[in-house]
Image (tube, rainbow, N blue to C red; front, side, top):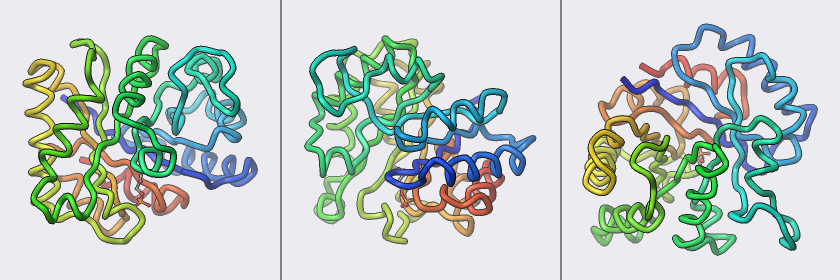
Length: 248
Ligand code: 13P
């Protein structure tokens, strides 16, 4: 059985005071939630949020990390720094990192393997552009990203994959339930062939892209959808709580 996972990617939002208000609201509002709940604050809020969540069921993710432990990498944050704060998950390969910060599949692969080595659970994001989908290339693009990003992935390590069609992120457009289920099924089959059926059955595949309280139940009810990676709607206690409570 895969426990549903609902993760909030706060992106470049939330100063410390707002971050603490948000997690306090979530901690009290979501007690007894059936899904695993994870929040990914910006780096500047990670430490205070980690302290606030010390005795909470809410888990912590980082939005990115470097693949080296330490060194002359101005502005970067290593996996060691994250585990030092009690972070357990790390979002890797988000389309915004691929697009605006030139992260290649090879860089993402190094980060995924480094995260595991450090004891962090990677949430690997994959997704196609609208142009790629309209050309009929969506499955090819996702297969290609997965093959490169998961190169050398151990067969028994924890894996979360987030399918986030780029055209659905922050646009208010969601993929249709058929498009989501078809892609999630494809991703599970791909992981099965690439890394074995046992890992494929354990891998949680999240959907991301304009998940809101009013569409969460339908999306989270799909058989190969094991949770959601939520952007905009994760910044409000009531919206995020409704999404968490919609998990099956
Ligand atoms: P939105 O939910 O704002 O569309 O963002 C999705 C996302 O990119 C989560 O990582």
